[in-house]
Image 1 (tube, rainbow, N blue to C red):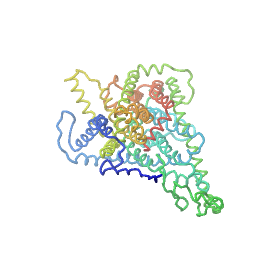
Image 2 (spheres, helix red, strand yellow):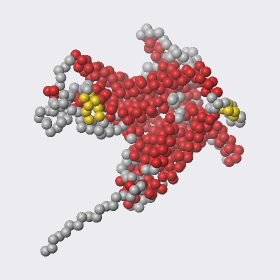
Image 3 (tube, one colour):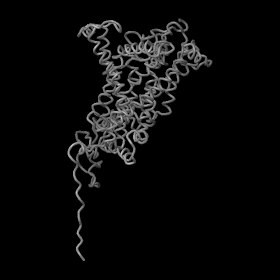
Image 4 (cartoon, rainbow, N blue to C red):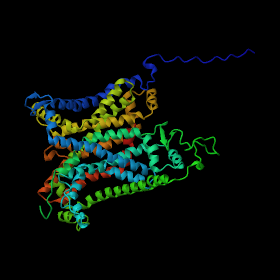
Length: 607
């Protein structure tokens, strides 16, 4: 018999230099779909958001009285006039305080909440309830709290019972502090949910090992939780600063109506992150070592287990550290969280009870149960105050607008997340740039476009025009940056194998996206859809700018108009019925889909 010869398999040739050797995930067919998928969102965003922003920037260097008047170059004159304006300097300081002082309060309470929410009983319930203010219209919250804070309101009444002098909470000296407090209250739940989503991904054994070496809850947060959620914290901090520059609704709700007439007087865990605890460095991937570097005598095979005998004796400093880090601060934070939960639930229930009272009882007995149930308040709000037309407008704009946002942003986010083109990263940043542009900076361009479109359509095309169409278009376009931002992060987390399998079956880019990618990305898509439903339902500024007539108003604008009329009337029952009509549908939606909203949102932002 001859000797068998084993022939080694032919060597696989290395990939050719150039693009083919860069580990590209996206097939050529997917690359050909890059621009068709991206262009609709890109053109709409550029034409109706970026260009108006640039136009507003150009106008700031000119003297201009508005459409139809000449524009003359003024250079830096407008900015110099603003710098000399006392009102502008005050507004600038207030904005700075709101962004950084309010942000410090928001994240201080967020960090304290993260320290205890990991283990406290009822943590899922607490997280859901403190997130609740994020889905409630700020206009509705401002109207309800504004009623409580009025000179003859419930807060001053309660203070009078305990011998404290009444204060003008909505007066010039106090209203800004109330605005900061209201914004912190309404926003903190969002950042707690965002940061806790990242903290939930940290391996539990890190905390177990830290506890064995005597680390307090504060030290566990400082040396484990915070370093491993730092990326998500950075994103959260940027989002807070950007959003604090866009504050509008709570300011106008607290400052619009003045003193109403009373009835009597008309992130993700990243392996390998290093943490430092007790003066020694441990690797988060491996776990904690012993404080004194000694291994457990019975576990020589495991260098990351801790010898309890090697702990140093307790000192006075250690006792105080334990007292504050494990007892006082965590327990005080837990009490504050439950108080916050009770306040949120009580406020929602109180608004519902107020809507069932007559105006006299609303004002004179704000915390009592209704003597008789006044269903007529809803009829008065629905018909007399124009809420029927406003509810229809809000419903149509919200449903159609949310679907359009998803239809434009999902394909764009898909190709931006999957493509290896250099343009993909730059265009992702280009969309994210829109998050930093306050809508208030493009108010003038929006009004110019609105007037120009209306004139053109009426004079040259259809003979008529509805401003609600203009409102819908701007609501969709201004929502695209956030939708693309969240969906791009979510699409990046999807496995590439699903597309490769679709390609092997002969599916083209459109079919693979619709039949394969979208079903897998359903949680992220549904989150963006629901968040936009909530955002468009509660949107106020654009509605006030573009649809000023009663027939075109949305619910927040109608509620604000009704609240303003309280200076001359006293139909408080109808006002609170209007708040219920605006707020309760979103609460029902949140009760139904709350977990999906938070999980999908944090998954997209965390990545």
